[in-house]
Every structure is written in structure tokens, then in C-alpha cells.
Length: 87
Length: 87
Length: 87
Length: 87
Image (cartoon, rainbow over the protein chains, first blue to last red):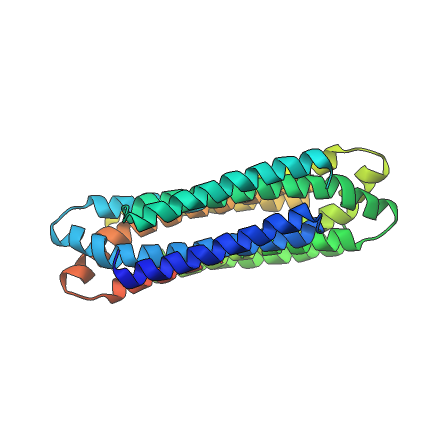
């Protein structure tokens, strides 16, 4: 992972950790479940966006390098990731 | 939320927070992106399971009470949650 | 299911069937895969919207009636549906 | 798309069309909504599997060729697809 990608991903992760801490407080303070669920949905969406950044970095580095040296495993891994992503 | 549900949900949340801390370490140590992604997928699945517990508690309490007092809003909220869940 | 819901759901289903027929033509005519995938994503979203209508009808009829006769199975089924929805 | 991939994808599509026709019959015969929903979930999963096949074909052909001629757009498209896949 290049440095700007890592910095971006870590910043997103810090945001997600803070968001989860907020969810914890909501549960401890007995917030209405529907409102808690809307926040956990938002946390999952933020994780998906982080995954998009990880994937972009992966494609532009490891996948390009893999293809350039004729290593098809990087492609099989991408299909596997797609199938795993929402299971 | 009843006490056993809250205890279960908070335990799951602690597990998720620990899992995310592990993801952070993986990124800081420059772990292969594909392996990081598999872990973020697992974090999202763990959040979805937590949501299932929140939803079960919500249905058995707020929704039952809402219907018993003839308040249809609890049903509209459920449809809205379903539509929001994966957007 | 009441008649307006069934009519709405069948109309949506006809639209989805037409959309899938379009996907078939795209594949037969060797359309660029990325463009085909964008259409299958749209088909899945249309099915999710149809599911929202089915769920709304189910909640306002079967679930309300189940709760009114004290039958908790309708609630367990909803949790099961939530967990199944994206697996 | 190569011929074996296209044949596989069209076979899966025929299966999905038959499955949707079954969903239509269920709705017309007023089947219990929960059972209909379980079938629409299965249809969406079958579409996702078809997408996995389309994606695998795309990666092994267009993406490899794109990278070999230094065209980074194929990578940006993959990130875009990932972000679109479940929205």
C-alpha cells in the first residue's frame, strides 16, 4: 500500500472506531433500537468505503504487478473477494 | 432493550472493536490487502449479526407494544429499516 | 396479500423479467461485461424494492394478526428473514 | 467473453428466469409472503453468482489486456463496480 492510501485508510478507520464508540454509548444509554440500527448501517457503509480504497490500492499495485509478471492468482483472488464481500 | 439483550449486544460490540483494532494493526504493518479485506468483510458480518440481535429485541418489545396500542408507525419503521439496511 | 399490493408486486416482477431479458440480449450480443454487470446490479436492486413491498404487506397483515393472537413465530420469522436477506 | 463463459452465463440466466417464473406463480397463488421472500433472496444470490462468472471472464480478458497496454481505466472501472455492486 502506498503512503497516501495507508494514511487515508487509517483516517477512515479512526472515524469508524469513533462511530462505533458512539453506537456503544447509544446502547448503554438505552437509545431507541431503530436509531441504533441506523447508525450500525452507517458504520457498515463506512467500512465498505474503506474497502473501496483498499481495493483501489490493491488493484493499482499488486494486481498490475501480478499481471505484468504473468501471475494469474491475483485475478482469482479478486473473484474470490467479490464472492466473499457480501456473504 | 432487556438486560440479557443489552449484555449480548455489548459483548458483540467489544468483539467487533477488538477485531477492528486487529485490522488497524494489519494496515500499520502493511499486511497484504487481500487479507485485510477478508477481515473487514468479517467485521461487517459481525455487525450484521449484532443487528439481528438488536432487531429481535426491538420486534419482541417495541413492535409488539406498538401493535397492541394500534400504532402502525412501528411497521413503517421496519420497512424503512429493511430498505436502509444495505444501501 | 391484499389486491393492490399483489398488483404492484406483479407489475414490478414484469419489469424485472423485461430487464433480465435485456441482460440476456446484452450477453448474446457480446456487450462489454462492465455494462452487463451494471444492469444485473440494477436488477438486484429492483428485486430488493419488490421485497420491500412484499415485506410491508406481510407486516401490515400477517404480523399484526399474529401478534394480536399472541403468536410470536411471526417475529422469529422476521429475524430469520433479516439474517437470510443478504447471505 | 469467451464461448464457455457465455454458455455458462446464459445457462445461469435461464435458471434465474425459471426461478422468477416460479416466484410469479407463488404470488399469483397467494403463497405465504415469507416463503416468497426466501425465493427472491435465492434469485438475488443466483444473480450474484452469475456476476462472479461475468467478473472472472472480464478480469481474465479485458483487464489483463488493458493492463498490458497500460490502460488504467480498467482498474478504475473495477473499483466503481465494487462500489456499485451493493448500492
